[in-house]
Each structure stands twice: as C-alpha cells, then as structure tokens.
Length: 135
Length: 135
DNA sequence: CTTGCATATAGACAACCATCGATATTCTCT
DNA sequence: AGAGAATATCGATGGTTGTCTATATGCAAG
Image (cartoon, rainbow over all chains, first blue to last red; front, side):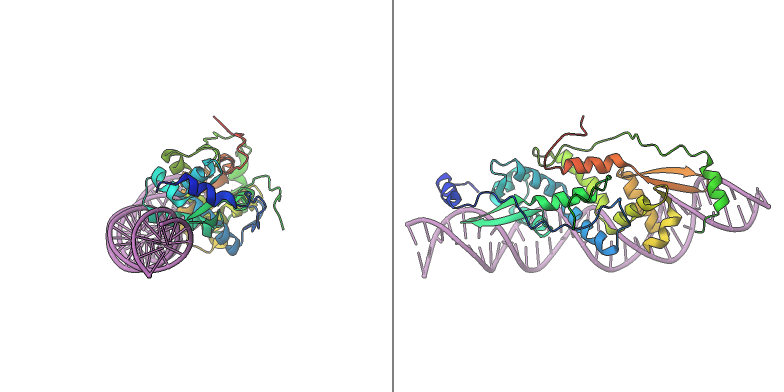
C-alpha cells in the first residue's frame, strides 16, 4: 500500500530505459475506408471494449500521469476508489487487449501504456484514411 | 426492403447537399494528458461503448461505403445478417452517442456518419495531445 | 380511409460484465 | 523456513446488453 522509497529506488536501479519501440500488432483497417469483415470488426471491437469503461479510462490516464508514466497496482487502488481485486481485473483486461504492458520488478508489477494499440485504434477511426500504420 | 428507383430519386430531390459542418459536441480531454475525472471518463466511455460492438462497427463501415455515404435501415439489414429490429437498435445506439446523424426523407430514414464524435474520440486517444478540437 | 412498406418499440431471454470479499500465489527480507 | 507485502484468482451477485419475435407507429399512394 505504501511504498518504501529505498526499495523503490533499488528496484529501479536495473530498469531498462522505457522501451518505445513496440511489437505494433495492429488490429484492423480504417473503418471508414471499406466495409469491415466480421473478423476485423470483432478484433477492433475487442480493443474498443477494453477502453469503453470509465474505470479503465481513468486507470490509463492515471498511469500516463505518473512521473515515469508507469504505475503498480498498489498506487492505483486508492485514487481510483475501487478494491484491489477490481483494479487488478481492469489492468488485466487492458493488458489482454494490448493497451498496457506489464513488467515485474521486485515485489511489484508495473504497468505502462503500450502506445501501438491506441495508435491502431486512432488509425482505424481516421476519417482521412491515411493508412499510416499499415501492412 | 427493395427500393423503387423513381421514389428514391424523387425523395432525394430536395435533399440538402451533405452538411459537413457539425455541432462538434466534444466529450472530453485527451486521456494521456491528465487524469480524467469520473464525469469525463463516463462521457468518453459512453461513446466508446457505442463503438465497441462488431455489428455497430460494421454498420458504420457499411454506411461510409455507400455511394452517398448514407444508408437507410432497409439497406443494412441484409448485408449485416441481423433482424430489422436489431439493426434499428444498433443505429439508435450510435445515434444516441452522436456517432450517426439521421434524416427522414419520405418513407425512409437515412443515417450518415457525424464526423465530429469520431474525431473527438481520436483526439481523446491522441498520445501527442495536440488539443486540436478544443473548448 | 385503407393498404403497404419502413421503422421503431415492447417484452423476453441468455450471455456477459463490473464489483466485491475471501483466498491463493509470488516475491523479498530476516 | 517463515513472516509480510503485492498481486492474482475464485465464486457470487446484481446490472447491463445483444438478440429475437410480435406489435405499434409513421409515411405515401390509390
């Protein structure tokens, strides 16, 4: 619940500098470009469904607002006002959808935002259909 | 179910040329910029929830793919493979979320994509947080 | 005004989901 | 090995939702 500063620093000693290059597993083609197949629609809906919850949106924004843009479960329970199992559940949903990355460091598990999925969603909703991220 | 061409043309006679300027009722601030309030999160989640369904995503893409970028209920039932009431329900959800506009013309009700809400979602998910559409 | 078509609403049902308390797992330090 | 802390899993529960059939509403043409 409370974090010991010395332990925190120690465990971050060997932390790799925040990785910015990601696997970039894009989910689908722009929605406004051509009719989606059922499979494409299911894939995009899966990611959107993960995002479409107030608690999860707040989790994302809370993580992004942290100094290192990462947070452990224990730091999120109190500001969110939900129980620890519920927070854990939401983090899992976001991780399964590829929106969050997780990394265990010592006692804690830190979550970061995996930018590529959010970007994929933005591209999918792009009215200009730029095919920026593409295959 | 089947559309009479003469009636179709007649009813489109007095159609205003597709309006591009929209009320632009934006829902929230960029998620990655600052922690969302519960109200902001609820608002954004509402729009995302409307988008987070395979049938509705396919509806959007089907409408966008039409020659005039608009479609009536009857044109969407068959390609979607769902019952007419179900299609009507999904169109209603999208309209309530501000994703679709509706306009009655004669016997039919035509749905168009209301770009501003999609754009608002894209801005909300923007990692660069440009505050392009703003208040 | 009646018939025919397009759309919406009502009611029902099954599946899903957010949430919780209780418990298990995994790690660290002594 | 054992205690303590962070996280995940389990089981239950109340609420939401996607889908259908049946029915109602609204518009147009004869």
